[in-house]
Structures are given as C-alpha cells and as structure tokens.
Amino acid sequence: MLEKTLGQNGFMIDSYDDPLLALENFKPHSYNLVILDIRMAGLNGFALYREIKILDKKVKVCFLTAREMYYGYSDIFSSLPANYFIRKPIDNELLMKRINQMIADDEFEAIAYKYCL
Image (cartoon, rainbow, N blue to C red; front, side):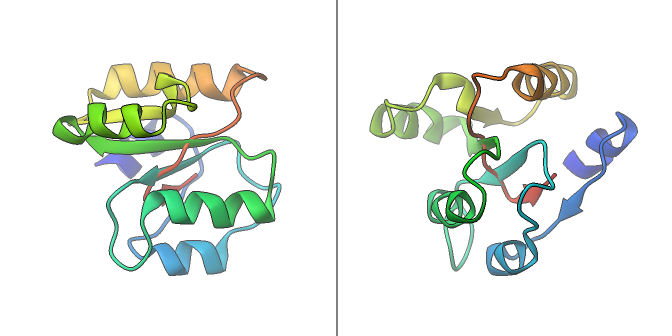
C-alpha cells in the first residue's frame, strides 16, 4: 500500500521486506529519503538506520511505528525531532505532505523505514 501511494505520487522506490537485503542493496547518495519500519525481523529500524548513516551521512531517514509504540519511541529517542516518526496506520494525504516537507527541508537530517525510497 505504501509503495503504491508513493509510486502514484511520482516517487521511484526500492522496496525491501528484509532489512539485511535493504542494507546490502543500499546505494549511497542515491536517495532523497529512506523510510524504515522500526519493527523488522533480523535488524530493527534503528540498527538499520545506524548502518545506513555510516554509508551515507547525509541521507534523510524517517521511522514508521505503530500508533501504540509512537510515544514510547519518541520518548526514548527524544533527541530526534517528532517529525522523524510517522505513526501507522498511515493517512495517505498526510504521509505525502510529511514526505514532501522532509525532502524539501534542508535541516531535516533523517527518516527511516522498511521500504527504501
């Protein structure tokens, strides 16, 4: 569903269900934004974020999280701005607005998720 929404809005997408494959296929300096799900098997979104940032320090990364998990993660990672986190379920219109804002914002440094843009 997320890939479809992004594709319909003109984004080119590299999508992976396996975080290790996403890392293996990550192309530094090729993405406007990486969206990472926090909860993934094998390598969680935060661990994948750290590995991606080693490869590309400037890539913008955003995290997807279940609604019930949002406040726990945003409290734990209070050093990250709240707009680094997108709560699921996702409203497509709001998602596109947030993504376009993050891409346009030169100050926005990171976002992470299961699907790599």
